[in-house]
Length: 347
Ligand SMILES: Cc1c2[nH]c(c1CCC(=O)O)Cc1[nH]c(c(CCC(=O)O)c1C)Cc1[nH]c(c(CCC(=O)O)c1C)Cc1[nH]c(c(C)c1CCC(=O)O)C2
Image: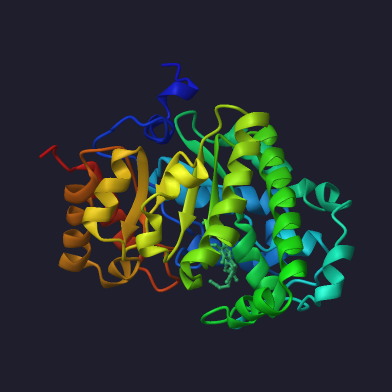
C-alpha cells in the first residue's frame, strides 16, 4: 500500500493530533549502547569522520530503525559540527568528551562562516540519502544545538558541569557575547534550512544547557534566539515543524511554546506532571522517561513507561526519553520499552 507523508505518525502529533499508542523515538538512539554502532564506529577515523562520511552516517542512523522500528530517525551528526565548520579545531577525545579552542572575545567578530555549507555538504548528503532509504512512514528529523548551548562549548572549549565559563563571559563581555549568540542564531538557522532542503521532515533544536540560566538570561539567550530561528524557518520554509528541547528549564518552560513559536516542547524527566499537562494543552510535547530507567530495566522501566503514558498519553505526545540514552543501556530494555508502549491500551 502506498503511504504518503501525511501517514507519518510523528508528523501528525507535531500538527497537534493525538495518536495512541504514541509514536516513539529516543534521543541518541544511534550510539554506543548498540553493538552494531560500536562496530561501525571502530571503522571510522574518529567521531567527526563518522559524521562526515555519508556511507557510515547513513548506516548508523538506520541501525536503530532496523532494530526497533522507531517512528522517527534522527540524522546522525553532532551539535558541534557548527563550531567545527567555523574552524574552532573541534575534536573528540575518547573518554573525555568534546574539545575545541576556547574563543577569545575579540575573535568573535572575525568568525568566518563563508565555508560552512561546503564543510557540511556531507551532512546534507547524509540527509538526502536517508530520506531516500528510510521507510516512507518514518519521520526524518534534522537538528542543531541552540545558540546558547553551542556557545557554552565554544567559550569553555569543553563541557563543564554548570557552564560557569560561558555565564561569566556573558557578564564580562556582554557585547561580544551577544554578537556570538546573534551569529550562531543566523548560522544555525542556515544549517537547519539546508537540512530541510535536503529532506528533513522536521527539526529539533537542542538547548541542553538551558537549565543553568537565570530567568532573565533564559529569556535573552535561550528564548529569544530560538524564537528568531523559528520565525525564520516559518517564513522561509513554512509548514516544517520545530521541536524545542530546553533541558532543565523547569518552571521557565511554562510559556516556552508561546514565547518561541516551537510546535513541540521537549520535556526532561524532572518536569512535573502538572506543568507537562498544562504545556500539552497548547500542543505537542515530547518526552520524558528518565534515561536511567533504560539501564535499570524490569519494573523500574515498566512503571516509568506507564507513568509517561498515563500522564501525557491522552494528548499529543511523542514518546521519548528526557535526555539521551546512555552507553550503559541494555539494548534488550529498548525492545521491552517498545513492546510496552506499542502494546498499551487506551485507558
Ligand atoms: C550537548 C550535545 C552534544 N551532542 C548533542 C548534544 C545535544 C543533546 C544532549 O544534550 O545530549 C546532540 C547529538 N549527538 C549525537 C546525536 C546523533 C543523533 C542521535 O540522537 O542518535 C545528537 C542529536 C551523536 C553523538 N555525539 C557524541 C557521541 C558519542 C561519541 C562516540 O561515539 O565516540 C554520539 C553518538 C559525542 C558528544 N557530543 C556532545 C558531547 C557532550 C559528546 C560527548 C559525550 C558522550 O560521549 O556522550 C555534544
